[in-house]
Length: 292
Image (cartoon, rainbow, N blue to C red; front, side, top):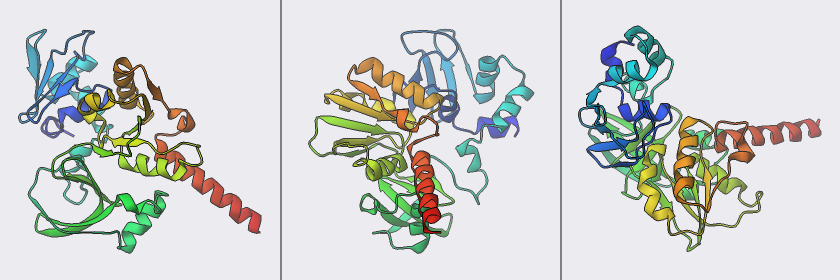
C-alpha cells in the first residue's frame, strides 16, 4: 500500500478501527472527541467529501497519512505497514473483483426485489446458521458497472439495503439503521443484521421475550440512535468484542443508565453470529457422534 491508496480509504473507517466513534454527524461532516487527547467537547472534524480532518483545538489537519503519523508518532513507512495489516473494507473496493464497501456511491439500479429463492443465497445463510430467519430478508438483484449481481438484502429505515453474499458487503441507497418495533418498553441494539438474525435464533433458548430491535448496520451510526434509545426503560446491547464495540457500549451507557452490555454469552468470540456458528457446529458434531 502506498500513500495515495491509504489516503483514499475512508477516514471514518480508520477512526472506527481505532475505536473512535462520532459524537454527531450529517451527510457532509462528522465530529469526534480529540483522538490525540482527552476532551469533553468534540473539536475533531472530518470533511466526508474531501476525506480530510481538522482539529480545531490545535489548528491542524490533513489526510489519513498525516493523521496516523501523529496518532502513532511514526514515520510514513511505519504508517503504511500498519495500514497494510488492517484489511480496510474501503481499500478492497479498489479491486473490482472484490466488493467490500460499507456504503456504495457508484451508480446502480435495483431491478428485482423478492423473497429469498436462489440456492446460493440459501447456502450462504445456512453457513451463517440463520437460514430459518428469511422473513426479515429479501433477494435483491441489481446492476452496477454494466454487470448484474444479486445478494441478500436487509432493508434500513431510509429504504436502502444492506447487501450481503459470500463475496460482497455493500449498501445500496442511503446508509441508515434498521428499526423493528413490537410496541415494547425494551429494546435490543445490534451492530449488524447477522447478529440480529443470530439472536432471533436463540431468543427462546436465552429465555428472552421479543422486544423492539435496532440494527445499526455500522457501529459508526451510533450517534443516530441516541434520541430513540431515550424512549426505552431497558436497553440490551449486543456489539462486537473489539475496540469499536467497547467504545459504542461506553457511549450508550454514559447516556443511558438502564443500558446493559450483553456480550458475556459470546465473550470468547468476535460477535454473536460467530458464537452461533461455533455453537451450532458443536451440536451437529455431537449428533453425528451419537449416531455412530
